[in-house]
Length: 233
Ligand code: ATP
Image (cartoon, rainbow, N blue to C red):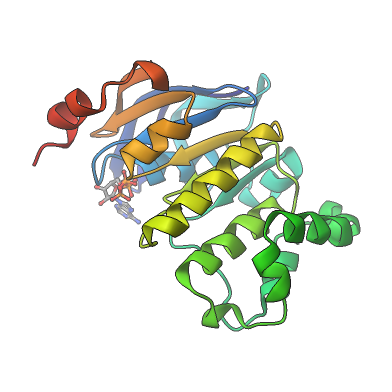
């Protein structure tokens, strides 16, 4: 269980998250939604140790992980697939994937993890020697996902994977998320596409102004009411 408890975090003097509490149950897909600037990415960065947690705590199976260096997270079984993919454009698909297994403890597993990645994303197998910069947006997102999976994380944190992708590619991407969940992984998904997120999520948190304003099983969420209340322009 990943447990975020009353966390405050932000950028220097600017605080963004205000006592945010969220629980991510094992083997479940939890979606975090909310308007632009609500603090969703900030929350993910705080979990990954990319930002200091200035109050509250983050626990993984009871042990505190806030304050843990980001580079240690893969060895703890936590991986993040960042917004905007952040793939290495001048490296091949396979070189990008190998970078995902950079921590020393992961290196002996590179071969078997590559095989698993290509089984999950056959299109990447065909393009393993292609420069990542020449991939389509959907393929680039798949590389980012596959790279994040290289340490075989139990907890996969995915930030806005569908951004800028064609509808058919988005459908494919959500099918991959469903498969990763079926493998037993815990998935934390930040997503602008609320309808699509609700369709795959078990639980939903809504952030607004850096606060958790709604926590509900996905099946109980009424999309129209939610949009009218929180996303109306
Ligand atoms: P979006 O859906 O637009 O990605 P979000 O919910 O992920 O939004 P965040 O990216 O977490 O929101 O941003 C929350 C707030 O923090 C915003 O007001 C943003 O301007 C601010 N912020 C984000 N990054 C920085 C930074 N590097 N320095 C200062 N403020 C930042």
